[in-house]
Image (cartoon, rainbow, N blue to C red):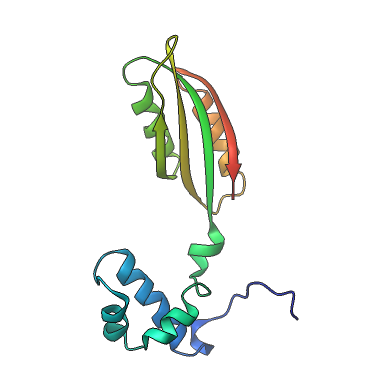
Length: 146
């Protein structure tokens, strides 16, 4: 049993502290509370319980169903190409996390794009292929995926 890393367990059978840790993390992340002390007080758990479990407790969606991938693209230096590229990512259902574009050289610019996909196993390759087909797209490569 010591090889088990993750379990999927209904919150109905868990001690109340685990869902409360998730709530504290959400309050801090969205800025509703400025400190862990105030978030813990609002939710009704001790700070020590929060600090004990904060790195171990995640929602199912947060840890298992979302995939982070990074693409490297070479795009023509023409008006609207980057905009069309980002729109296609959005239409593909991906959440854009980072965009880094280098200064264009020889009529092309390189773009590194990190996105979050929602649970689709082949989504990273499907999106890559769709981005390759765009007008102004010279090449798109999948650099990494989680």
